[in-house]
Length: 79
Image 1: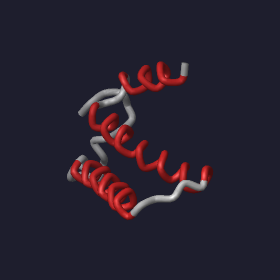
Image 2 (image 1 turned 45 degrees about the vertical axis):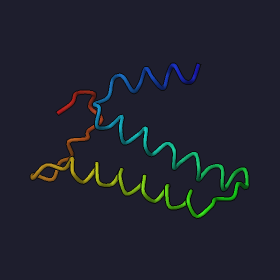
Image 3 (image 1 turned 135 degrees about the vertical axis):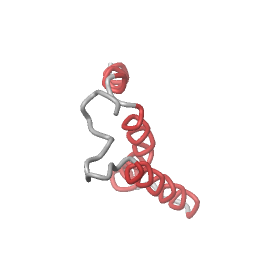
């Protein structure tokens, strides 16, 4: 089903993009649970989400080339 399509798509992306997607899905699921399901977040969960977002941003910024283009293109071919 859906998980198979998810894996099918991830296999065709560079490892750097897959890492960012996999890490950010945790935060998205938490935000959706908060807004759609009324889940409450503890301070530790909020801090953890912040750390994950910070890690994703670090991965993104470290992937930038000098010419301004990102190495994390969704071209399917790793740089």
